[in-house]
Image 1: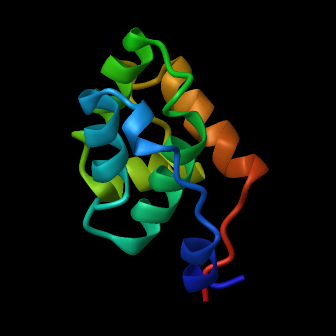
Image 2: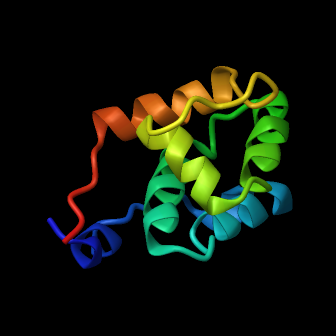
Length: 105
């Protein structure tokens, strides 16, 4: 499956049912700056945004402030995350990525 196929298979949460904060996170997860991070983070947020507690949204927003290159390295396991970012939210993103790997051409 290529990146385009992944995009075509996206399952969008019904944005009308989401709070403005969740809609903003959803939008920004798919508009990161690199296609790889759009797919890694966007697919996770698509699947989890409706169920994340407020505290996890806080942590997700903090992670989304990290430079794409660093966040990508943490998610794919190229580099360990620093202690201030290593927590349950990042672990959940990593777990999602491992269970739903991308096949990029």
